[in-house]
Length: 340
Ligand SMILES: *Cc1c(COP(=O)(O)O)cnc(C)c1O
Image (cartoon, rainbow, N blue to C red; front, side):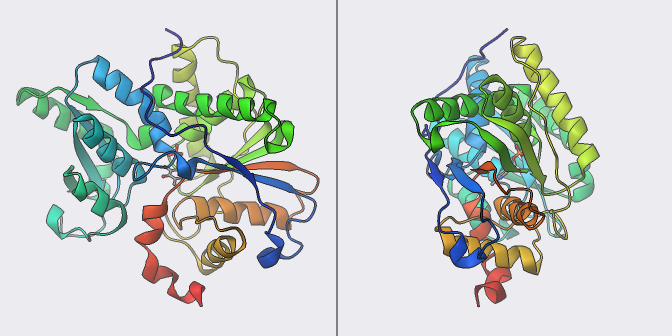
């Protein structure tokens, strides 16, 4: 099979904008670098961010199979789970969300009503809180839930963590085709980039971006900035997803060269250190773009670290803003000091 079916859900093309006022907060740090942002935080309203591009393909398959329920998983403040729940509500499919919590209270109703969880509850997603130990067995757990739903007469469709499989990755192959059209129109400086930088959490965006960057000549290198786990883990995950995507569409080329960065993930998944928080606030004040402390803030912090090492001088850089605003809003108190 090639060219998998797509359900148009995202507002595209998203804009590409130059970052011209970074010096107001970062001084000479980015001098000599030509930095642009692809605004995938604008792919929609409450369903916005990078996940909806993958969901265009995953929901297309769910509908083609006659499913009435989608089952997925993530951290308690998962942007992916929220996007899945909101799109499910738009299309009339029930969303079952297995959400990981470190709280010992696994009663759904006790989860703080903020950020993504609030959005999930607004659209009446079926939230089941699970422990970190259970989360490690998430694929088996989702299969069990799907089997139980099927016995109850429902037609479930399982979406993996982050929507990250070969099919979901086509969302970012297509996003790179969109960037190619923008470059051809003379936007974004009218020529390809040297480096594409983005936050990496479950690997699907990295796989799709690297395949699409190669197919459509978008960037010589892709730098996924890991927000958890390490480089070896993501090399394995991304290679698997790339393999799945190329099995669906054998005309896809080998992916663009990738430098997975695992030195910028901070203390833990979802937790930013003081310096990362400062960069997040400075970036907002210098650009008007709001990054989040879980994903995009760490990726932008990675960009500042590369700039400190002089690696961006003379380079054209495309920073992919993957969304995550509800995750920022859920961490307001954590940012109190950085806000001054
Ligand atoms: C999920 C997510 C990412 C990471 O994308 P993956 O495809 O899971 O690696 C980056 N940024 C935001 C805001 C996300 O929600």
